[in-house]
Image (cartoon, rainbow, N blue to C red; front, side, top):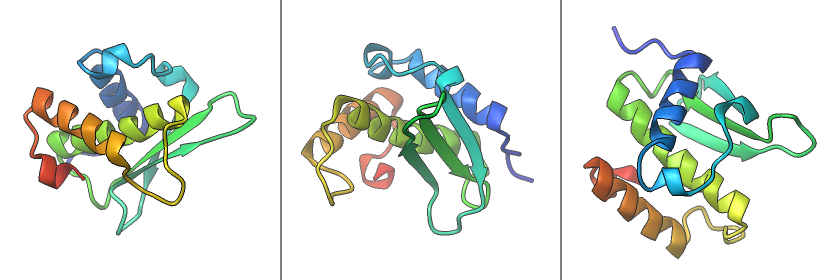
Length: 121
């Protein structure tokens, strides 16, 4: 049996990571301003979507098909939090999933949390 994902559990992972470097310096919105979704995607472990004209301005979805362990949840969340940071800072590169800044931030995140950078992307 795997980790049973709920929006509350996903929000808890988000809030935990917000307390750790480098996320704690990024001024990400509180969980109350993010919509957390349990998805059923088979090919996407997780996603981040910026929402316009909504009280909750961001949506982060985690796939219950792909994520069944705490470490996998935290890695997926960290990855999407980098996307969230870049969208808020407007440093995304159009038509590019992971630009040079994303790769640099991912290295910092992986170094701090002890994750394999090659698997993180």
